[in-house]
Image (cartoon, rainbow, N blue to C red; front, side, top):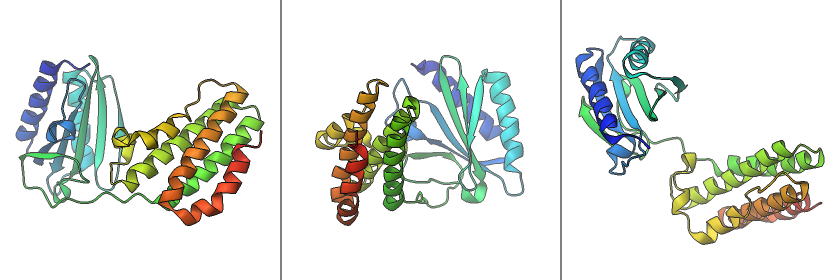
Length: 249
């Protein structure tokens, strides 16, 4: 659980630094704080636009040094979609700080999340790349097959990995069909029980061979239930082969 007062102090400190940094031409609060969903577990999410002619990597490096030196960061990792760089820092407490940097020409909201401008002029909202159901379906049958292979080879941890992946892709397909957020299972808790119930049966309860086989059958049936609605023609093509793969034991 995050100390709320500390989170507010740190966020204010970062925004004050952004205002004082002549290289930063725009700043926005993103994440749960920008969409009215912030609670005691929330991170600090900021998105910063970098002035024309200034190297984003150089600004990122300076800010990273500041977060480690002044705020006591323990570790970080990056996500780099397009022209944006998101650096997530872990502080003790625990507190996570997610700082996004982008050239000023791209400073603006991406996707459907909240975007509360603190200063600067944002560009129009850009859409995230759409989910490709066909690609997810392909990954899913691949994972069913490789889960069965792992079970037969006596590789229970690998089998568990593939079974969980089938379940996760089924959740994503269900969210996409209903217009819910698809990344990081953000829409999963809004799915109705008739969808989540069968998917929940696919949880692996132990690494026993019989249990892995049961979970694989459940994951396969949940996937096929979703395919029946998502893509009936693919359902007709895959239902028998996938059931044979999943139920062979």
